[in-house]
Amino acid sequence: MESPGFSNTEVVDISVTAGSTVTVDVMLNVDSANLTVEVTAGEDSSLISTSSSAISNNVTVTQIGYLPLMGRKALELMSLKPRISDANDEKSTPRLRQYFPETLLWNPELITGHDGRARLDFKLADNITTWKMYAVATTKDGKVGLTDKNITAFQSFFVDLDPPKFLTEGDEISLPTQVRNYTDSVRKVDVSMDQGDWFSFLGSGQSTLNVASGKTENAVFGFKAIRTIKSGTQRVTALAGDQSDSIEKPVTVFPNGQEIVRTDFRFFDGNDRFNIDFPDNTLPGTPQAELKIYPNLRAHVADAVDGLLRRPYGSGEQTVSSTYPNLMILRFAPADAPIRVKALRNLQKGYERLIGYQMPDGGISYWGGRDASDLALTAYTLRFLKDAADFILVDKQIKERAEKWLVSRQRLDGSWYTHYSWEKSEDRQRAKMLTTYITHSLAMANRAAASP
Image 1 (cartoon, rainbow, N blue to C red):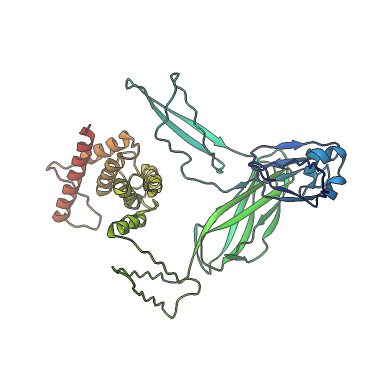
Image 2 (cartoon, rainbow, N blue to C red; image 1 turned 60 degrees about the vertical axis):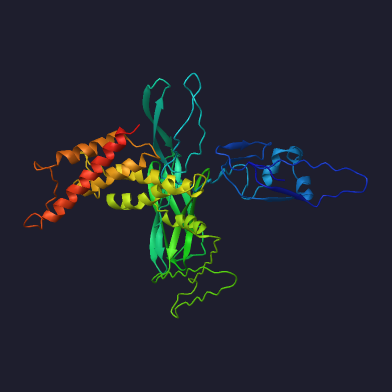
């Protein structure tokens, strides 16, 4: 028996004689429901927190026959669920948390009704955090409204897992996982890390903690990365009676060597041969060969656009540079190209990262915090914001503050220059280059603002 929202149940060994009809009553177990379901069937009931389960039950007619009368017909079938014991033992089936986006929702347009109201359903992430929601609304006659609101996702008992996103084969680490107890009582918690095929434990994969109310305790798991893998999973589960949690994060393991990529390209008609030679010292399990055949050069160029996809990272300059290729994809890729969805998502993430590098004076810094604003980087950011505004919503105040800071740093002769501590005198050539670049960036930004 299969049905969305319920785990699979199979009834076997049903005796059916010729010319007769047999009725089988089956109650499916709840699955993937974000609530606590109390299943009651006489004195043998148990309290089960059903959040997510992938258990498939094999129920025989003999088992059903031994159940109480009520159980043969409906909810008492829950007694057959694995790991459910006596009535006094409350248990919780942990819901697996594995969806951790950096941006919960980006929706560029939502049409309201005549009353100004609209409904938008979206999936809440698995992060235990407070999200900041911003909304901008406009009317047909040009009126604008702004609002913000906090959305808090919380549960009273949970486990934190934050493994390194990238490891090298052979790395050994001791990874702490935090068990947080915000219930009103002390909890004895069984914490375990699932065995993965890409790592081996350096010690035990299980731990038992006593976590006081309102406190946090660490369970430390040591492991070694033993093979390369892309987006391998690591899962930790914490069980504490009627409270439980399970969390899964991705980890990529790179080979402990130097990556060598070679490309061979040619036109051919009919048959052709490609020779692939791997070095003698190639690491086991790492050689890969990929063959792509295109009907024409245009198809080749369109496919190569995938190589431009970049995930924003690093300093202020690195954030702009790693985000720009995504903007180029949106500008030149066909309107129906699937890659545009990823490029738009990366562009939005890059813009959100860049906001954090704007200093109180309006300029853009390399590292944020107490770092000083930089002339060239601020001009570079202005160019990026001007181009990004064609595809995402860009806050005009961010752009205007950056422009004002650049203008305020202009010298009396109209030039710009940054004097570094190691310089004994001004580098005139660099001053000319910087002045030209900033002037061009300001001109581009103002021209974009004047366009309809």
